Amino acid sequence: MPTKPLSIKSDDEVLVMAGKDRSFADNQRRGRVIGVFPKEQRVLVDGINIMKRAVRQSQKVRQGGIVEGPGPIHVSNVMLICPNCDQPTRVGHRRREDGTKVRVCKKCHQDIDE
Image 1: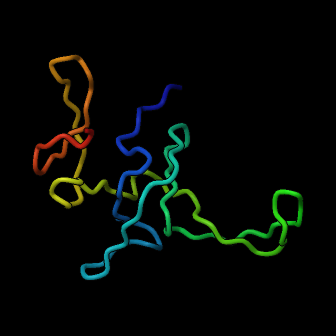
Image 2: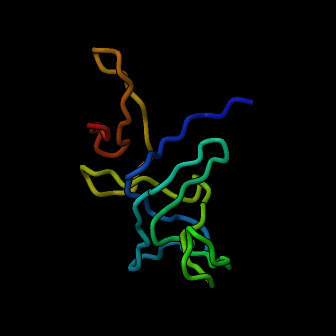
């Protein structure tokens, strides 16, 4: 079954809206997207959903032990932060005159993609 393309891409800044790392009024949890998995509809956000994993020593990993790293979070639990108005926003799409498709902020109506 084909999946819908995600509105969030790598290197976007997002705000966590739900889950254990959700934001509160004065303590907003923001992070940069470091990985996108469209088939699973999940994203990796730097500093969010930190998971611990036991790793055995190998040639790739010199020191074995417990390693911390970000875990994937569902794309419905994060909201894109517009680089123009610096507000969490929904994402729309628009076609330019040259035929390219671009993401648009629903609050300030500016193009998100340069």
